[in-house]
Every structure is written in structure tokens, then in C-alpha cells.
Image (cartoon, rainbow, N blue to C red; front, side):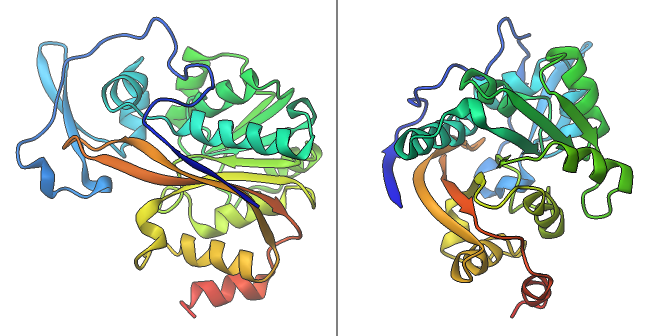
Length: 278
């Protein structure tokens, strides 16, 4: 395992994740914003002669407005996570002597394709996406048509058999999930199903908020990752602390990007243990 040193905001050597041109919007943040947690943040956007209030985690509302996701998170709040996670994956592959062209990636929580777009720049030939939000698929078709080999809107906690069959046919050897773990956006059971679709010795690239490593995590994701590590299900190869984006208060929000090998599927008994909080 190697540790890449922390990299300042916006300095990852991967092509920009912001499409050009992107519509510009007037955005304002609330007074007293210092007291809001990350999943409580909201803003107001000026649309059609009036200000509209939108919570930053209301992805359906954000995706429905062309270019707002990119303008809000990448231009205004300076998000770097797709570049950070993809960059660490590329660095790890180079360290292991494996070409990115050999990856068959499942992008979990794919949204409107920001991560998939960066993966393509690395030379990844096969990228498929999964999301639960129908507005994400509409935004993808509007903004980045043809980006993914396959793109499914499905609930991986209880997926239709047909969707699982489609995903299994892809024979994925890499799972990527960026900025979607730890706030309830992707439940642990959905992560497990995606993880189990990856072939043994395949790659897993993801990130978690830094604070999840230092205090109780109600979502259970750090507890799960720690258990996967301890029981040899996941073998961490590289990690990097970096600035994910700015909060609406201007504070820098730090995350940890991780790249690991999948050694085997996640045992049902382990999921039950995590679910009980043991």
C-alpha cells in the first residue's frame, strides 16, 4: 500500500470535469450558513424572474436544470472529487503496471456522468453507470449522450433480476463510486450488491468524508470499510487526503480517496454484523 500526500484544491493532473460551455446561474447562500451540516446545505438559484430554494443533496431538482450541477459544485464550490479518485486510480494502476484500457468499470451513483467522463479520459474502454434517480438519466442523455456503454436506473437494494443479469454480463473488474457514500445516498446493501458484481482481484475506487474516520458514522460506511479491510475482503492499495470542495460557508471539506483490490465477495454474515452495529 502507498499513501499519496495531500494535494491542494484543484491540482489533480486529470482533465477538467466541467463541460464547456456551462450555463451560468445567479446563486446565493443563506445567512447563518456556518451552522449547517454538509447534508443540510442549501442555496437559492435565480430562475425565471424569481429565486428558487434548492437543497444541495436534492439531486433530482439540480439535474433538472441544465448545467446547474456543474455550475454549483464545480465552478462555485470547486469540487475536485472525480479528478481526485480517478487520478489516484490511474496512479495506482501505473504503480502496478496495469493499463487503464483493461478496466471494465461500474460507476455506482453515476449521476449525469461527471465520473464516467473522467474515466474515459484515462483510456477506460468500458464504463457502465447505475443510479437510482431518474432525473440523472435524463440529465445524462441531455448533457453527455453516449458516454456509458450501459446506464441503468435501478435500486440495487432490491434490483429486478433483469437488471442484475445485464450488469453481470459486463464482467466488471472495477467499481468506482465518488462522493456518494456516507450520507444515505447509497445504502450499504446497495454498495454490497455493486461490490459483488466486481470480479475477484478487481479494483475498487471510492472516497469518504475525512470525519467518518474519526467519529461515529450513522450510515455505517466506515464501519463496513473497516470490517472489509480487517477480514481480508478488501485490500487497500493507496489512499490520499484531499479537499473535496468548499462548503457554502467557504470552509474546505476534506475527504479521503481510496483504491483497493477486491479479494472476495462480502459475506452475508458480515453485512448482518454491520447492520446490528456490532
